[in-house]
Length: 276
Image 1 (cartoon, rainbow, N blue to C red):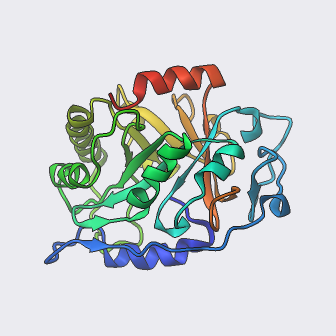
Image 2 (image 1 turned 45 degrees about the vertical axis):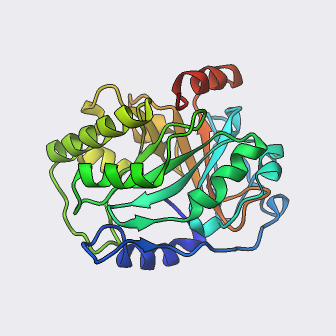
């Protein structure tokens, strides 16, 4: 997922980790970036309590992120330990934090932040970054080993996109991608009692015809247009609308996301989709 000005660090990390068949697991380092002042980076089209260091010029006569009432973040080790009470007071209603990648890499962001988010009343879940040189079963087992079932947590997320900076150069065809996704999702569904959400990007979605999949709940990245423009006709529940966001309580830049419905429908979604 996008990491704003931390992309360079992410590229290095991805090249070094994520599922190469090494002698043991690798673990990223939890960082401690300075917190930015959201008010200093105000941007049109975004909720007023958030900022953006590299904002898109949203056409405010159209549907923009600020039109949605429910917002959340996704993060990883790059954001360090988050002040969840401050983030919640600023309007953060949910969060997913990276936990694993491939079959042998751990991101410490989830284990550091999950207990704090729960204590602050922010629904939280973990995401897995998919690696095409490991089998779906291997990756599902790795995620389950490192992310305990937790009643009330958000469903897991499968983050699936091309591994551009990774040592893995495998690019399966669309039918294989969809088959591997289905296997991974089914394993996690059986373990956590709720079907994972799928996060993806416009290029990956189009090249692998993910719109052909049924029963999948999508979280779509599009930072310069509404999802209806980048994924015509597709259903979605979450929209990642910036990778360079600024949120009170969160260090550095962070991805910000909108839920597709009202505050009431968010509570209904949470009741139906949280881990039992």
